[in-house]
Image 1 (tube, rainbow, N blue to C red):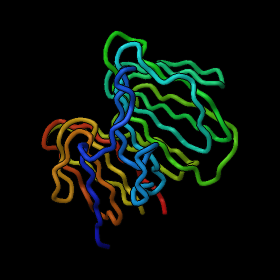
Image 2 (spheres, rainbow, N blue to C red):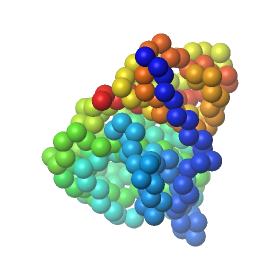
Image 3 (cartoon, rainbow, N blue to C red):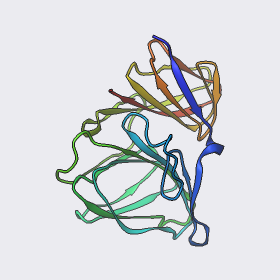
Image 4 (tube, rainbow, N blue to C red):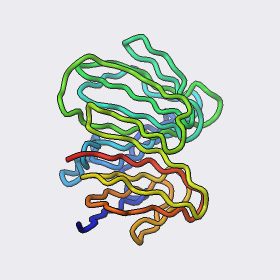
Length: 221
């Protein structure tokens, strides 16, 4: 099988947010006013947004539906509140999942005194509707897979030392996002914020050229 890899650089993302409100956003897929019919989704992933919130800034209550929303904090601490009664603090190393199903409302804020940066990934469910649900996994261990069955997807978190390798999952679609560090993947050098969209992956490996943190989505056809 031929490996097909589409590398998207951090600097190619669509800018967004509201600078006056302390919100800076970077969108890897077509999003909001930045409509790109050729960049609507990859596998189940329909959004991968890097959000940077100044202290006291945040997103006021807003609604979602028919989306699996997975959040990964890069630095700082995220306050989450939703209409189902959940109120949590999400920190680096935690996996947060909000299944919006038929509809849910939530608030996301930086209530701390330091800048907050988090990655939010939206996945399309195989079957829309249902009952909203919420889960947070504190301090997920390296190499521990996290399943999102509604989207037919599995998240792999890898924290690599310099010189360490990790296998890329064998799947119909694999989305690799570099959170920290530098990695070499199929002859390409990837740094923070860079991503690779891969199909046909038998035996593919990523090599950390410096200490690195990777998020890899394994998705079926």
